[in-house]
Length: 113
Image 1 (cartoon, rainbow, N blue to C red):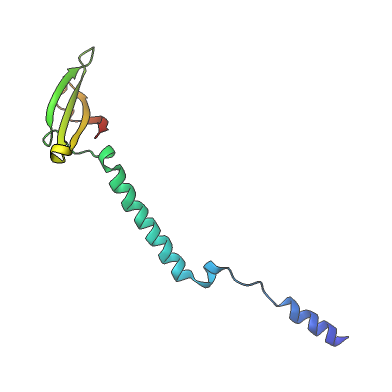
Image 2: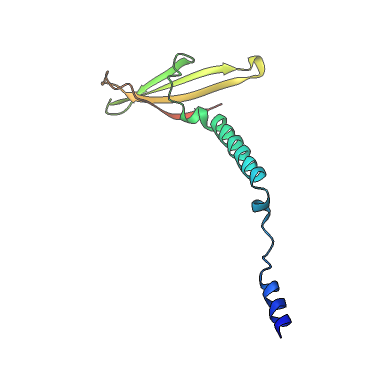
């Protein structure tokens, strides 16, 4: 009987195999780090034109300026040509407060190529 108990206790000490992530922690961490860095760089270059806060009015030509109905805001349309004869124009619309010289907030509401 003691052999059966010894054999039963040996089989209870067997643990399930470790997962792949636990067997390769350094490779897993480096893979996640590389993926996160790649995603961050991709998103930065993809979304940068839409969320940029710098004033692009010096880069482009002011094509048209239009005040709002109550005169509180002014919409300015800018354009920058690109690509030579076969190229196109990058256009954007900035909105800013008309009568407040202290408020330098310019909001980009439209951008297209």
